[in-house]
Image (cartoon, rainbow, N blue to C red; front, side, top):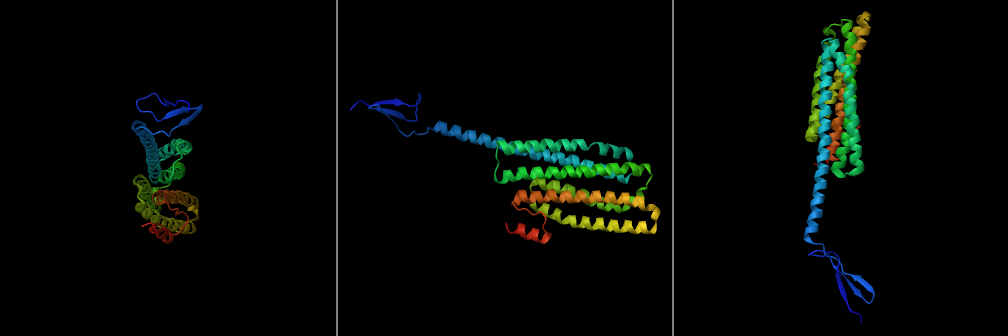
Length: 277
């Protein structure tokens, strides 16, 4: 029998194993992973997880920044409308490009996260929720732009603020709903999201009441038909902002609970969410 020669696999103080050269045949013993290599592997995993979390938090922060800009646009659009301020209306109408640019940038970053990180579970739900949320925020920005554009001709035609009395109450409810939806997203608060979803029904009722009132005014005074139609378009824009805020809250419920609660009644929504409690 030929001599057996043991050769270390790695040149180090602790090697993984050794090769036995015997009669022209090579046998490799199973290596034992040294402690320092295990810790290095574990450290790399922790760093990758840290980088993933940082990137996800960065995306979440950008959504909130975009939401803050949208809130300002809505508030300025309403101020321009209710105060017949054509100059402010022009500023609001021309500032929508910034919101559009933020939507494109955040959407692109989410696409890169999906391609490179391949997130799963709650991280995946966060990315999906962000993509959907920025779409609704962009559409709220479009409605704010409409308010600014409506404000300019109304101010030029000297439509008095008295005509906008019917919008003031709806205006306050819509701003509160938008604020609460963004707050629920910021804090992952499903309960606040559910409460905000329920408030959309009140906004719809107020919108319908405004339309009935405007129809009555048009019947009583046909000369005011054009003014009433313009106000109805403004009320419709506010109602749509409420709908988009509701959508954002539905994404929050999906993010936190993992439940898709779109297109279902409030009763079914509460039952579906309560099954996880």
